[in-house]
Structure formats: C-alpha cells, structure tokens
Length: 88
Image 1 (cartoon, rainbow, N blue to C red):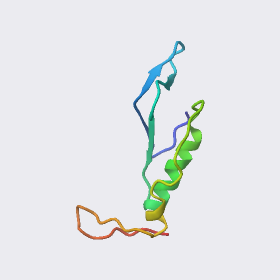
Image 2: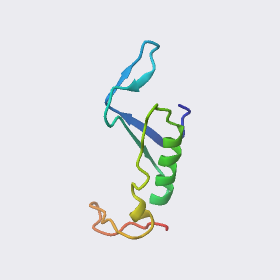
Image 3: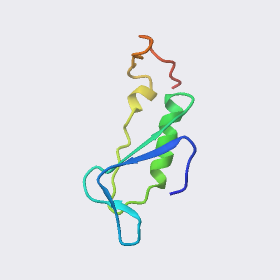
Image 4: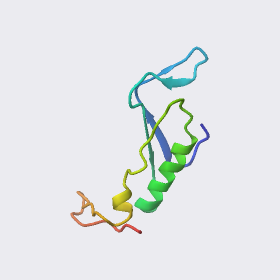
C-alpha cells in the first residue's frame, strides 16, 4: 500500500501468504487511523487510507465519527473536560 503521511493501518487477524504478503486470516482484521488538524480532516484522511486497502471480499464501515464530524454529538476531552473545537 502506498503510504499516506499521518495515516496508519493497524492489523490483527492477518497472516503472511506464500509470497510474503499480508492477507486476511478471517474476521475483523484492519483499523485505519489518521491524524489531522481537526476531527473532520482526520476522518477524511483515514477514509483516504481505507480506499488504498486491497482486500478480497473486504468490507468497511462508512459511519465512523460521522455524527461528531457533522456536529450532531459532542465529545468531552478527558484531558481538559471541555468540548474540543470541531469544524463541520
């Protein structure tokens, strides 16, 4: 997979095939996470990373952090006790 700066793929439930490629061993196998200047950008960048994943029969959710990105819910920061600034 081509690297995207600030985007990371975390995997479990994977194995190496005969050619040394990482393939699914079944179940939920990947999490794609990203950094951004705000939640909206981080979410967009994570889904950009998802688009680069090639996994036969793979499925992914499209709703992760959607409500927060649209301002429908607010998440309080445990570090400050305040609601972080989220662009919608």
